Length: 406
Image 1: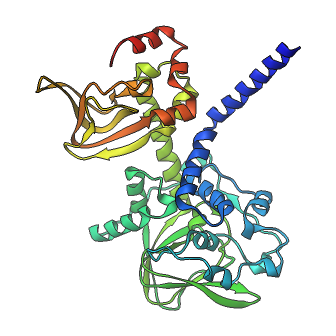
Image 2: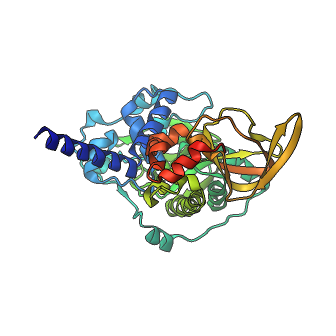
Image 3: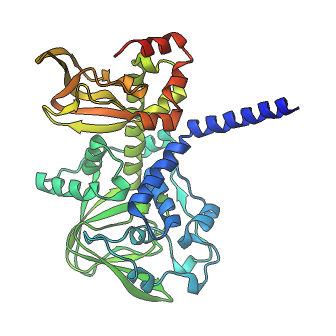
């Protein structure tokens, strides 16, 4: 009997572990906790909601019931004394860079329409890639170089775009379009449907909340500030009214464009990364799902010409795939440097670092601008478990790597 119970418990543990690995739960939670420890938010519950929305915009769908439980400003049966007023906004600290606090930005994008506050629904656009692709039309709005550089700097510091790589960021910048407003113009109106995110390029805007039929100024936005982030994620009415307090220029991007950028480029890159991983003998024992998990854990890192990526004899704990550019591998013996070879996109090096602590056998140096995809042993173990256990599926491969120094 005890043996049967033990076997059942083992199967249940295996099933749970399989689920955690398949859905990358450990990786997701660890990343979220790392971000939380760095930012130390006063409201950790809201931070979790905001973080999930920013990291997984294409896969999160918020329904009315979920919204009523998870989002404080989306509750059903909201009473007057539960509504956020201007005092709540004024007590929030403002970051040193002058940008609105995150909770304010998120709040501006959620619905607090008094006229319909008994119940309001927040729904996500269909996340089916084919549906998004049908709705999407590539847009390129030409911009002067200085304007583009300024936009790039501002956008790259916004939480919603923090996970975009260089290619995705360029597509986003292409799609952003200019909108000019005169002082007193209404840019967005509380309660109306919103589908654009706005970045203040120059000038200033004021944010108003309508409570009891009276508009109250709760926030002012200046150059570099933004509003309407959640319009990129959800089909939700505007949470506030924003008016131009001076002549101003804004740059906007629409929801469909943003979702297509996130989904199309992410899926394309995942397929490319999986193709790279298939070429690595050390990882040949991985299943398709495991390769996908590893591909999602790869971190792009850029190096300039002559930057040393790894040093001979250093302890190694990171494996690299070469995505762009070329590198040269050299070793030093008796004071003489010898070139061992060169790597091109799709090649890899340092894979033994996922398995052992052996010193690096060579120095790898960037030749021109280089982008590598890095994966350290700790991350690999977190998402898939120890590589030694994976390799033991193929004992011949395991023995080969344990015997030979690479």
